[in-house]
Amino acid sequence: MADLIPVEGSAVPETEFKPVFVLPEDPSLEEQEQHDELADVESVFDARYREPFTGLLYLGRLEETCRIAGHTFVLATPGQSERLEMGPVHKPWVNTMTAEQAWRLVRVAAYLQRIDDEPAPEPLKGGRVELRDKFRWVCESIYSETIIEKLFDACLLLEERVRVVIEELDRLGESSA
Image 1: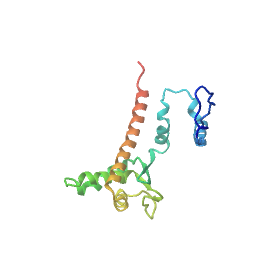
Image 2: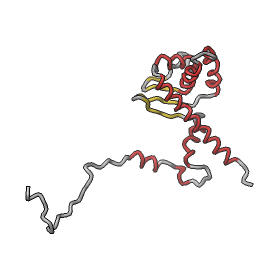
Image 3: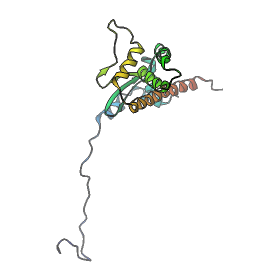
Image 4: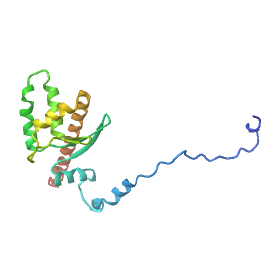
């Protein structure tokens, strides 16, 4: 043991500490930076809103993927017809003890597009999925009230992103005088 303890006044060799492992760089981040064709375009439009604006412009909606309790949920902002359907679907629970819970389920059903690998139900003849069918699907697929609450919050945040982008566009459209 005496060999391991340095004697006072003796030179202690300098050691170089290196990390045990190094995380590899994520190549997808470099690709994203390289593929942003609009990065060099001069604009008064804030770059933070560029991606949501593009989604609204080309798709008419925003989509977002969120992970809750180990599952992947794909949400998309609903169109006007789905928004109008929300009221009639919610109507049986109005003025009941479960009205708030039912509203969360209706809203989640309007936004939810996919749970893991299971897409929302689609009609056999093609066309648009009725919100009532999606509502039943959500009720039969998700049993946890906590997961519904988290999805409801994610829906509200997605809607807020739409509002912020539109307000930014509105701000840019104002007169400069």
